[in-house]
Length: 109
Image (cartoon, rainbow, N blue to C red; front, top):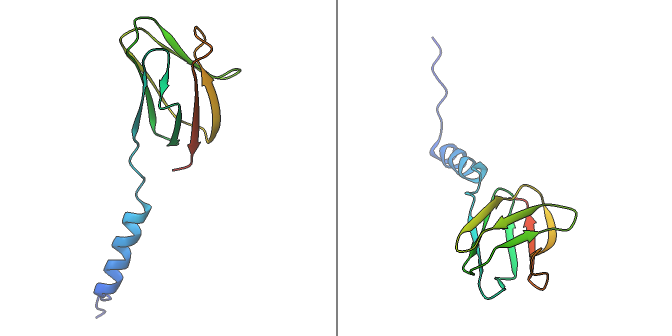
């Protein structure tokens, strides 16, 4: 009759450590406030899977627009969000107020 192999405590700890290390990082929500025609913070660093939320405290609409890329419309006194899916850096601006500028840098998780 064969007996089941025994597992040492050391092997259990290694297995647990590998499980924790392999667990995906929790996605974050990164807030960018819009007030008085300014994105704040102007530069944001995030990871793929994170969500960026623009909170518009102004009384008029804004956009977060990447030339030749995406655009998020942010109505007055509300917010809009987007989940980040691509690694890279982009500069964005408000289509209605081109002096409003921001930069988004996205890295892998």
